[in-house]
Image (tube, rainbow, N blue to C red; front, top):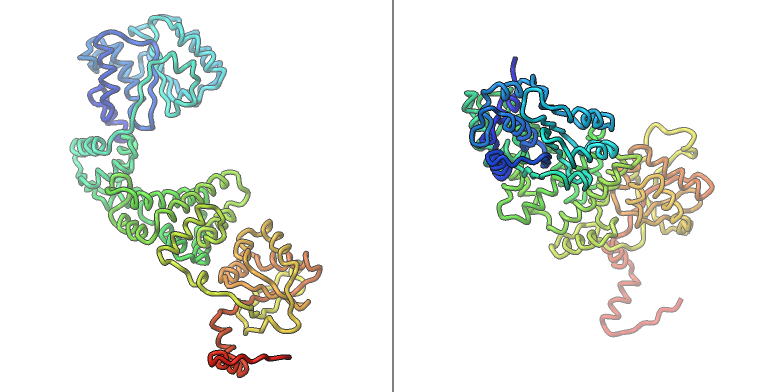
Length: 535
């Protein structure tokens, strides 16, 4: 039966343990001198050798022929502990045996002398999962244990342990294993298993493992199932590093302030059952890579991506300032906190993307700093540069009772322009109330219409905005009917809704140029003649 690599190549002596020289040296010195503690605490991230060192220590204290602090692995005790036939060495999973009754049984059992070995060794893995009552039951035993008992506690979250437990243990911290050590171990395993592993592929796996040798061997096993000649392309394919185009598409939309494209990509991901919280985490990691690229001289040591993706990240990083990257990360981190307890994760991500695409919707100091940096860099969008004068309207018919019968198709939003300054049009004084209602019912639509105005003749309502996202949002997910219902609730009757655009300053100047009276007055002023025109 095939045995996975991380089990087959688990270290059997302290000498075989990679990347933890301080821990293994200290333990071997204690074993050589015979100064053993009654309780040890091994803490560190996953896959760094905590459980392996605990089992090696259990063999070493009971080995009949120890060799310079290491177990011989050939005597009856060593072979029995490896096979699990010696009951004096007990391994307990605290995740499934975390009750006070389990620890009480252990406390009664520990008083019995070992049957075969010299010491009764209790390895409690994931000890932070014990309940408060279980910790209290274990406390007295750790304080005054029998001479023949040794406790080895292992955890990845040492901060969850009570201070009373920590003070009674000899603590060893397992650091993340350097990538160079992991790569060397992978090359050794590849040589013993008779398959080829390229140096750059070994280093990529080591960086992906994030300091855990067990994870690195698992990734190597995954690559080995595809080819016995492992290259960088094999690693990229096996680990799913490819297929991250959606992150670059979203980043491009944010950079170009294209909210419509951002929402389209998000909708496609949502339809493909992409978890919004996972997407937010991926975007944070993506912009973290951009932050590293703009802050570190040798980012390859801190960013784990393929060479092709690294080049794409460099191109993306060149188009953003560091302040913009930090602002985006801050917004995404706040969104991640809200996603954990929010009702609609999709709406939360849509709102976030709109704020990122439209910095003017975000009034935080970080957003203002980002806009200032963009202006200093000369990145001024057409929307920011266009002066606003009087509006014109775009007519679009709509059903009279949208809340009762939903029409089959959305009304057109780009009909021929109708002047909104006609005598029968007046400002819609209740527009602020409509916007307040939208802020509760449809935050993305509210964000787009924050700076808009509205005019009405009593039968129709013209929304004055230059934000093209308005049309996109109105045509998707029933947002049109949310807007129509909000207007009807405030105005007290249904109204046809159309979209108008503010007139640019150039249009006003053209109108003045075609007016004979304006042209005559302008020429007279240039000639130094003042003419008083009375009505």
